[in-house]
Length: 382
Image 1 (cartoon, rainbow, N blue to C red):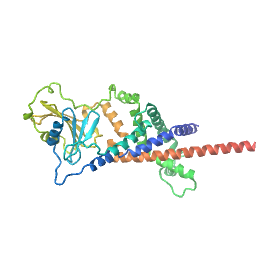
Image 2 (image 1 turned 90 degrees about the vertical axis):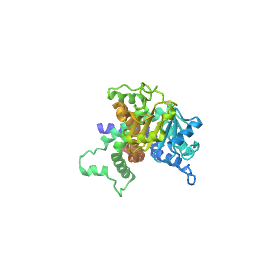
Image 3 (image 1 turned 30 degrees about the vertical axis):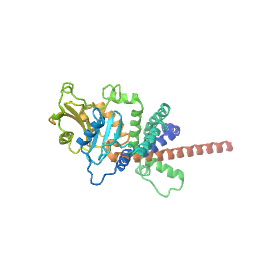
């Protein structure tokens, strides 16, 4: 009885939310390698002049100072100097030509615009930007998806606990005689192998979509959720140091500070330098050994501009346990927290979800059809 009730609840939930789950899965698949594709598009926009060498950190910062776009912003440098640097101001950013320091207005713009549209569709069922209605629908579909994963696990279990029954639910079979048999096999096999990543993706989607779910993450650790978005700690200058003045002729060049930071964070891939105001004694440098989404591979340093000595050095330990968990939920949704392997698993899970929606609807509708035919035969016999 429980199995029957759960089956129809599973089918009804899938039928109602299936289209939205399919769309989120399809767009999620497209977005799987967004960072790598966009970065490749940006790099392809740069043509290295014959015999030219990329500007070093000092030359880039001097160029920004001349343009009046330096202090107060963050310059992100790649370990490969030929990669276009990024200049950030709040949430906006531009890429710079590594050979001239000029802004690359159109570098990767078309690619970024495409992925922006796909993101709007993925999050808000819109092509023009955030939508409260679309966001509410997709948020509810994520909740339904969590239920489908949990109920699907129960329904997946065979009635008779034998290896032969488990095997047909774990391995695809060839030569199945009917579409129903094929869809049954696909639904169970894809569901079994993709269950864990799909459950994590759906659950993290709920945490991202709903403030109450995010607050539950903090409550689970006995903490109160921050009022705003918040962010990892460790980047602010100590209050008793920030006011000390330093004449610019005594300040070490940025390249020397970057080298000092590199000794404390070896193997870094990107370095984000908070460009200081004139006379500032200290500078913050964030070193990243990962892809920018892996908190355990980020370190924030506070360096004395006169000596290069580190007065502050913090990493993931500067964040509270709840903040770490919330950050994990954010980037496990895309798989990026586990690097390229995580992204690939996420992409495969999205593809599996599309198969599950199709085969689940097929199996449910076929079962409804059989029930209608049986009822009709019973009425005819009566």
